[in-house]
Length: 68
Image (cartoon, rainbow, N blue to C red; front, side):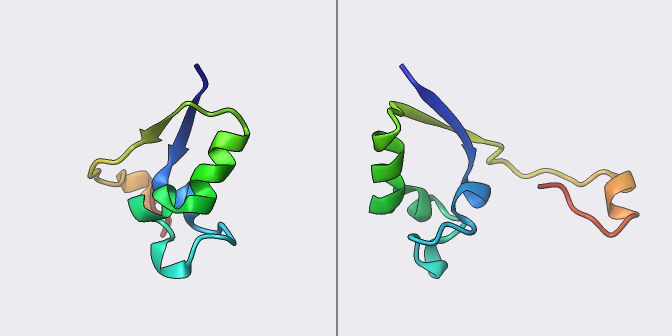
């Protein structure tokens, strides 16, 4: 079993074979070129990292940044 951990947004955000309107979405992860690549490197399952709402820390916000 090969489990690949990925952020939906990060994995597809700049992927050249994923249409721009699908980047950063679940549809981008399910796009045929994304799936084909994961299968070609032997991935059996994908675990998505954080997919829930969060509140940015004051330290981060105070510096004009945002959590990924």
